[in-house]
Length: 159
Image 1 (cartoon, rainbow, N blue to C red):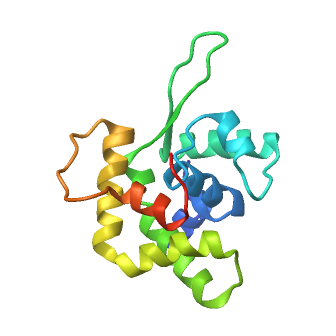
Image 2 (tube, rainbow, N blue to C red):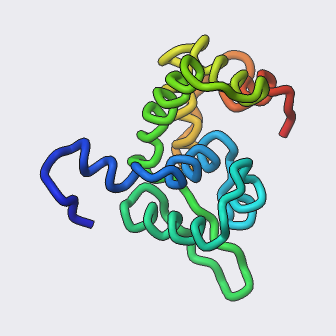
């Protein structure tokens, strides 16, 4: 997929600039939803199945996600690539802007507030955990609960 111009901002916007692509990535990254059905039914914004299918194809074609091979009747699992993992700081920055300038639910704002309070080291820890989950990297040792457990606790959930 060749961008319309050589501008790196344009090239990024062409892949990530529509509303649904970033929300699908948010749900893969922060919601650990890796199957079509989970992404469809777990979408709090109510993405349509045809839009979800289109965005998953686009994200795979752009090298942001990979689609695992699935036997007939089996579900394909999507995984982040390193390029996909590197979208987390972008999503984090957008969430911080939204926290400051847009209304939202207390529950979902608590997730963003935790990430903001924990700071850049927490985002790096999340990215390391995503590499374990999606790329098969060896886990890095850490004291106490991991980043996803801390997010779940902030949102009052358990997985």
